[in-house]
Image (cartoon, rainbow, N blue to C red):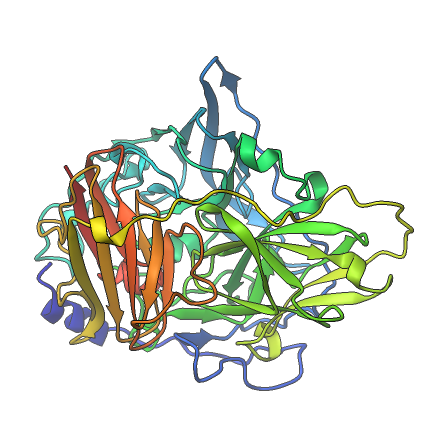
Length: 523
């Protein structure tokens, strides 16, 4: 991408969005802590008191047909008028008319085929985040689904004028995605991946869960049914009329990608939504519950903790990471979760007295962004709990770094007003790696800022952080790695299954949209 000069030019044309008075129903004036990445965009509408709304549980989508090997689904991407804040209607861009979109539930090794129909006014791209997926169904940014009658093109995007024509295969109306799901049980999610506009599209509602089960996981005595809760955590900001406000340079989302200059580090909202509801509450019995924690925010990191903690602490029992079950459970008092990361945890609410109100809080936030949701522990007597957390969960074979065919280093940094990898803003004509299928490689990431780094196609294992052992949240198979400013980490991965063109990028969506992405090609 010709990059830096043109990107500086269009950043300079942006007018910062004024953060008007929010009329908050919370005490305290400061919502953003200095350590946070990004800029707060305050709501302009009075916000409700927390814990007034029940936790929504996304609907599980039923297949339209099945055969011996495959389940077939259809999803219509459409605008919808939703009640997110009480008494106010908000227009969202949705999968199937809801936010989050419907949850897909699949079995490992059984194909899932999803036909997405685009009835939105702009192009879309669907990425199954965490999926081990062939390139033509992975959600490459150039594989757009165009609205019927749409005439825009990537080639005409201002600020990307020097970029070659975007590779990919645009289609009109609908696209069918095929997911072999030859992978472990895991908490995956699907979301928009349109080139230059992923941030505003996801902000408007384009995200949903895709859960994969396998025999190993189902054989474990983990919480199931209504005690297996997918929790999509996002932050948003609302205009005075209840609409979702976002500081796009091009409010029409046609040609000019990115955000106004004050928000290029990332856009932070002051309303925390869980499954699309602001600060919801959910009743629980004194039993074990599985919480599938997903940070689907554009830029906000969370440090999640239970308040009050259970007697003795260690209330969050981690059983899984991005790529599925850990080998053995880990206990935490709090968990740091960056955009796109997932942590599966079990909480034993029997450790609390009946009637206790247990808040899930964000220790990195304050005022409205400190609160996340609340669990209300029932006083109903229970005779037994059919769930527990075994000492061994799975067998994870470590990849051997000494067998790596190559070690590659990628520097994620701000370069003259843009976001770049190895000094290069996104240019699909210059892929930064060509791994051979079957090879093991070490990738070393170095950062100048908070960057959650996501690699498509291949899950990885973290082998070092800052030249030392992996951190407390680096265990298991990962597809997204949270790096703080001036950090480095090494991962080891093996590229298998599918040749073709894929991407890796920062999952701070404002960084991604403003060129912090690169192609790699498996051969």
